[in-house]
Image (cartoon, rainbow over all chains, first blue to last red):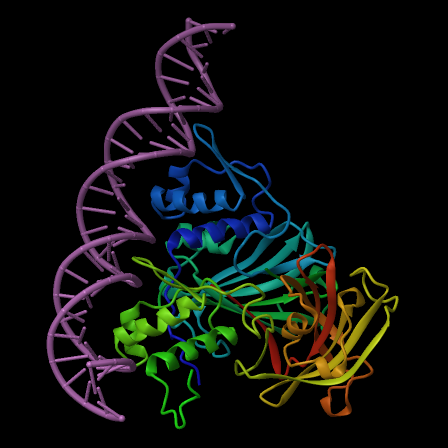
Length: 235
Length: 235
DNA sequence: GTGGTAGATCAATCGTGTATCAATTTTCGG
DNA sequence: CCGAAAATTGATACACGATTGATCTACCAC
């Protein structure tokens, strides 16, 4: 057996912040040349202090992903290829890339059904069902269960980036996640327009952890392999 | 100097500790950049004293596998190359983990068939067909095409870890890779014993790059989703 | 004695939050 | 067009807690 520590220490917050922003660059959510919000406002949105945020921005600047101009602002500088230190994974169109967007189909806080795996501390959870798009092509449907112990979400609180919503609305952030990719069949609540009823789909299960023991989120994603792939780049 | 001791007792605990942790790096259980728990907590978990653990950490630091930062923590630092032997292998048993092994079915150097995507500089490539196992459970079949411009491989040169073979036999190492996970049907050369004829399988396409422009390897892997998943962890 | 292990103490550094002022750019009124 | 005001980042300082660095003592086995 192995001796790997059970609860590896979290990386410093400023490193996580940098990675968070770099991922946003990699996924296209932050475009080249785009100006970031003022540091103070950004720090408030990200629930951190200006000093910590500035440390993260410094890291990005050293990686050449950000241009910082005193008196003006912080500007994204997109280089070729992924910039993150850590593995990058997401759904991409077969032709590559695509700008992500999500339509929320349903938001409800429910008692956790029995077919859900164990996670979180509460017996209830918020269920979010979404249809996901890349460049207006529907590529996946997904169902996210957020443990009610972390707070409750309503439909109008959601943004495209759920992790950002968690950070801004509920004040915690995801420090660790695990994806397991397999094969599955579309759920019965799949919108008609999504098509491919009954056809085998790519199926992703994801657990997410915050800065405490025990997973706080569990999600299932069904993607159409004829339109998108699960892509992972390793550096 | 003198010869090895005739009956070496158990190695000092701190050496064992270091080797244990190094193995965790090799198997991908400890990833690059990961932060270890505080020394005191880690020592308690490992049932040893802080001083002994620190000796082990010192050994790892001298081997370049660990970066120790006063006031911050201990961070895993992979040396050059793709890191651990199995770090890039991301199929796991449904129950998690598993020790990887591969049976080579066939090795041939051929002219690249037309259905292969563009990669490499040569018009020929070495085709390796393997059956993959985790803990003696057959989980996947794969076909690897290595551009002939990188050198030629024969069956007896192969080890379980292809990337290690590339480094040791051909003198280059893979710096970057991209996986695309989708759905596919098993190829016609799948061994009878693998089963699941006709059933849909997980399908992974991988491009690999060395320290030069242009992909040097292309591979296809078909995995049985009833036995293994494609796993990705984010810290 | 020598080396491995355990435990304790103090010093040095880092991570984070808060605050203040300087330097630069941008905006806008006149 | 000019200049003042506002906005924004740059730099520094301080406080506090967390974490590692270094050192010391004690015990034990060979």
